[in-house]
Image (tube, rainbow, N blue to C red; front, side, top):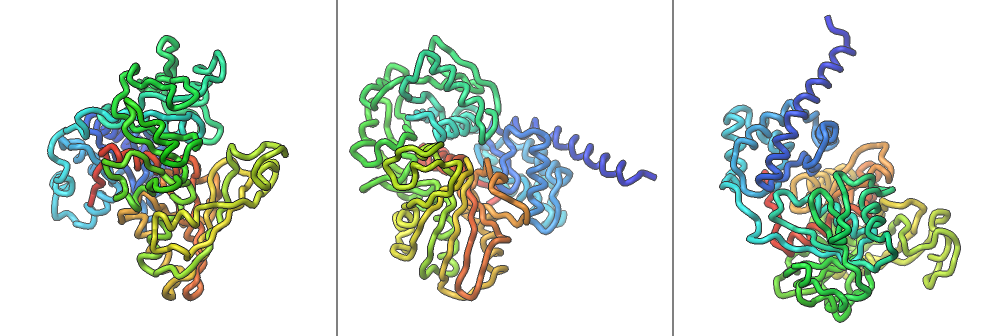
Length: 479
């Protein structure tokens, strides 16, 4: 008779073996068909065996029981037999649905039925890959580069062509490659990076990113690099109005996206909320701020069901490069004080920005911010007066369902773990994560705590917006 130790070890080894067999199928679907596989929103592309098993383990936080590779493996194998058009397939949800139909269909027939809309043969998303240029290569610029490289798939979608920067010295190219390769917050780049000094380019997992040196938009000639009809993402924040950002619109650049709140008549878009503002004849867009992206999806979800009469948004935001490491002069109040040593009260425009995205909440919210001595991951505290009474269980259950099965499932995540802290959300791909155990409800008053990776989560929102602009949004299945 086997001991418990032996039983647990053998079970783990069986799971490892199945996960190892799943990885080639996941890679084949991604490289050959541009099909992204996930487990309850956790991407499996470029995963390790352990990543795959952890993604399945995460599902237990959202389901009534465990979800293991033993259950998802037959479903993935059935998917691998099909010749699919591009799409995003959640094998966790598909497996749960298959189990619910209790053997009425074989796994092959069930999967073919559920994926019928994309079971139409391999097809490119675009006739030509969409060129993308990064203007600025700082915190957000390098994370956007990582995401664009990760999503290259078979190469027929978004194509990162160049990053425009000011030359900092003779070893500029090598240092920028090193910053892309290593990150103190987000860890090492998942792949191989080399430099091509002759082309002044960084080669990352086969993607050639030309580093173009220029002091202003007028000094760049994109045509000499073969860049055409590109979407330029301005990460500098130097220009926030239409006049300034339109300086980028020259031969080679078709549209400009600002990774900061835009001023004037520039459409401020939160991906998943007001995508209807992304129209072909508009040339300049804003992806709003990280905080606006974090709170708007949750506010919309709550307002749609319960109504919001009024509220206050307080953000505990990680310090940023705009603050000083030690006390020194700064043009803004308090921001001159040492960021790693102090909590710093500052202003945020997020509450007002909500009104640009959700006009129905105009005048109903106030907001403020505290910069805290952590390098990444922030929290928004939403203190709301609702239009009706509710309970903690009802409100949490509703937000849990929204995170699993709704048009906002890519924006809103949900956790019920009692021990999570800010560092646990580094690398979160959602705009915000509702911490359900911290939720407070009293009649028609509620307090919601929403974590967000203000760097990576925001960058994922920017990429979702770029995909919408380029027309390369993947259909999500099962529907």
